[in-house]
Length: 243
Image (cartoon, rainbow, N blue to C red):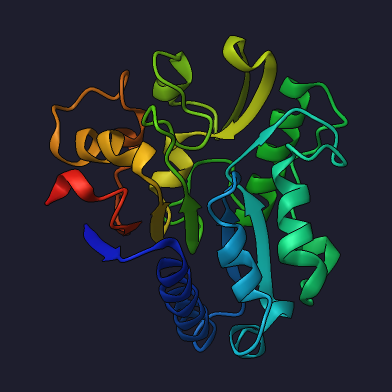
């Protein structure tokens, strides 16, 4: 595990944009495609905008990129809460990823059907009905003030899901369904990066990294790569208690 701490969210975003671009360049020098799982929420907006702009945009061969999402709110694509819409607005509408290589969670379907269709799409992409040794090249994750990541919320059975790659459930607090990748498929990724900013995350960061192992309370603790690498990119506010 590697922890990188930056003064503020802007410096963090620039450093992570450089790191991601370098990883894509290196991977595509030996592989024919690169798979990235995008994160929702407000934290990655600046990162997305940087990747869509010079010089980062020019260094990435977007035609060889496959885009996925870690989770989605079961709301229409044109709803501002939709994670995919945010990614299109800040990144995907500005770069040349072929549309057939952008793998959306289809929120026009009933949530459980959307999850099943996404799992089917992943099995098709990886060419396997069973979980591969290695799945995605890169998964970008956030962390909520409650320690959740993806749609793995405290106290929810989804935290411990072991059979499905993708699932859906109703989140009472938000009065909506969520569709999410499960820990199994994420933990088989090559690189996993948490991007965390803000003083409201300080306690969660400390508990996830330094506290007792209690994933029912702090679900981000279930993200433990089976063979890949785990990184935490944080600003000083989020990392304050680690010092």
